[in-house]
Image 1: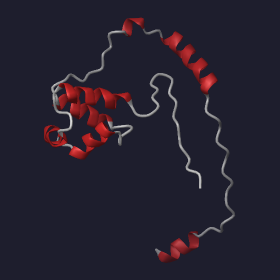
Image 2 (image 1 turned 60 degrees about the vertical axis):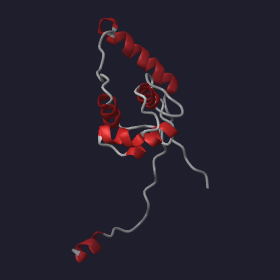
Image 3 (image 1 turned 90 degrees about the vertical axis):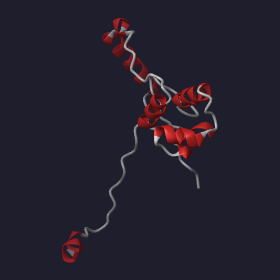
Image 4 (image 1 turned 120 degrees about the horizontal axis):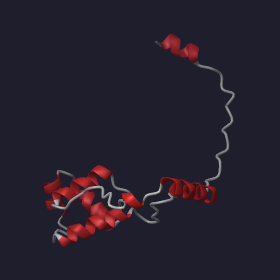
Length: 129
């Protein structure tokens, strides 16, 4: 039996193996000299130590945003959205670029599922209720 793999391609944030934020977080952990000390990371964040072991050893491909932010702030780093390039943002230009990208990378349409010819069981539900 063949296993189906779903690949999501995004225009502005692509990754193949795992989300790059995992590597960034583990680099911060290493900088704080806590690499491999999952118990202490768990204590600092209130999260499970196995979470960080999975991040470090490659088990986690896509961590939750709240977990990432929790770790970053627990290690004393700033976690904020930087809007310094706002002056250079051109909505019309970006919209045109996005339309061109989607035209080139548009995922194939899914085939519509055929409705099965099963009989309605609504009367059974009414009797059981």
